[in-house]
Each structure stands twice: as C-alpha cells, then as structure tokens.
Image (cartoon, rainbow, N blue to C red):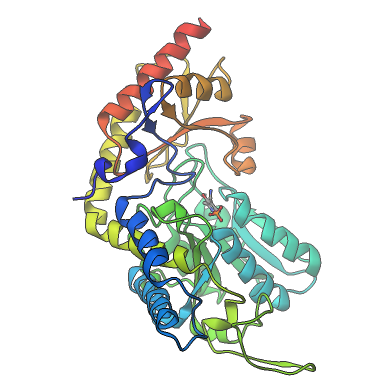
Length: 401
Ligand code: PMP
C-alpha cells in the first residue's frame, strides 16, 4: 500500500515543525515510484523518440508510447491515438479553443461555461469569442457552490456552439454532475469539453461512459510531474482539426509550399515532447491504481468529514463551498482575519495551505470575498494533519484576539 512514507518530500520539518502538506489541489507530491521512473529513464534510456533507429531511441519511444497506452486505459479512451500529450490542462483547453472551436465559431454564436470555472477554462473561451465576435455565457451557481442546472439548461440555445465544464472545482471541491450535464448538451448536439484537472486524483474517469468529446487533465495534480498533461478527444473530431502548433514530429512531408500532417496523435505533438514527464505520468497512474480509487475516496472523504466537523468548534470561521457532492477541499474565511494572515500563521506551524483567489475570481466575486484559505487533502494525509491544521487555526485566533 502506498502511503505517506513513500513520498520522500513529506519526511521533513518546516519552521521546526513536521511538514503537513495540505496544498494538494495546487500540486501533489510525488511518490518514490514516480521519482524512480524518471531517474531510471534518464539513467538508462534517455534519447529522442520516434526518429532514431538506435536502441536507446527505440526504448525511449516504447516507454513514451507505453505511457500513452497507460493513459488511454486509465481514462477508458477508445484508442491510444486519441490521447495527446500536452503541457497540462491549460494547454489542452487552449488547443481545443484554437484548433476546434475558433474555426467553427461565428459572430453571434455562444460558448457556455459555468460560474465555477478555473481561469484556465474561462480565458481561452474569452479569447476565442473575442476573435469570432461570439459571446461567452456562464451558468449560475448557488450558495452551496453547486451549478444551478436550471440556469445551465436555460442558457443553452441554437446559438450555443460549445460547452466547457469543470469536473471538480479547485476553489470549492464541488463535484459537478458532469455526466448529466453532458447528456443535456448532447440532446442539443453540442460538443463538450471537461476540465478534469481536479478530478483525476480523486475520481475514476471513463470518458466513454461520461459521453464527452474532450477531456483535459494535468500530470502534477495526480502525483506526476509539472509540464505534462493530456488532451483526450474523440478521434473523429481530432482528425478533422488543424494542428495547434507547427513544427517537427507532426508532419509526413514538408515542402516550402505546404505540409502533409502526420496521423493522430503526432499531428498535435509538435517538437520534442516531454518524454520523462510522460513516463512519470505513466508511473503516477500506476501509483494511483495501486492504491485504488475506493481506498482513496474512503480516506479522503473521512478526512474531509473530520475537518468539516472540527471546523464547527472554531469561532468566526465560515466554510465556502458546502456542496452535497464534494471532493477533498476545505475553503474557508474568517470574519476578521485575512486569508493571507491565516496562511502565514499556518506556515509557521509547518502547515502548507493556499490563500488567494485560486484562479477562480468569479467564484470569489459570487461569495463576495477577495480570497479564501484552502486546505486540500490527498490520500497520504492523516487525521493528525487535520489536527495540526486546527491547532494552527486556534493559534491564529489567539494571535488576532
Ligand atoms: N482547471 C482546474 C480546475 C485547475 O484546478 C487547474 C490548476 N489549478 C487548471 C485547470 C490548470 O491546470 P494546469 O495549471 O496544470 O494547466
């Protein structure tokens, strides 16, 4: 069983206190398994992929394509070629905005998102809409931080050309009913992208069962490296898209006048890819499956319930985001203490949390707060970690009283 002891970075002190890492929604720590996979790649088979006939290049290519196969199985893709390696969720969304949506968008059209999105799932659509003279619409949320399905349905019209939704909110932890929302979109024949950045560490993903057209996620949120992510898309759609970037690796033939593009997935992987990152992602998937989502959910739900319960005893605090279906996030504010002060006091206690708008300013605006303090949990966290968080918050109350 993979647990805290297999994450070397967690075994240290910060400000003289044992590190309690509760910033997992920003990025997760890496198990030894992932670190070993990357070291092993660089120590034994480092070479560029796809082009070489020498042995190292063949081995690197096999490892790179092997990682793609793991990704495809992990999300239940129809085939490996539908899984494009990108720099992360942000690049995956930009790829779809630029290469799929923009060429199909006309003045007067609309793109639909929700009020719960990360900026990565807002700004690319604003840019595409601005270029095309289209309008970006956002479904409303309620006081619990849940998307209002009536608002979502009411905003769909014949003008709606694309829908992009997050699976799990990074700011509040809300798990959105994406399968139901995708079905609604599909009843209007509208293509849908799901931003799965916060879902893959906590929820088993089956893109076939979800019924979406594109699914985007990042390696570093799920125990892999930064700078690697995935765009999954239905082959029929990807095949009809123009490349997102030009360069080597994505071509069959180039003359000065024109180029003939390689088949999927290479058409969308211009230049030398993040080979080590992809191999690390494959190892991160192995580590997640080794623990299993059932165990992950059991541990993380217990931690979330325990933390939510402990919170009731703390005066002056309010939890922001109380959705019925919630993943491992506790976002909160205090009536007098600024979130950044809370973050600083917790840091002095060795507790790492995040204070800020969490790249979800529309969510902050809705709740009329400039920022929240966010503790976000992983299966490697323990009840003792929650106790350390609560002790830190008690200290903050004493300091500010
Ligand atoms: N969407 C959500 C919901 C996220 O939490 C994040 C990362 N905070 C992103 C998109 C962007 O991911 P990345 O920075 O890895 O591209």
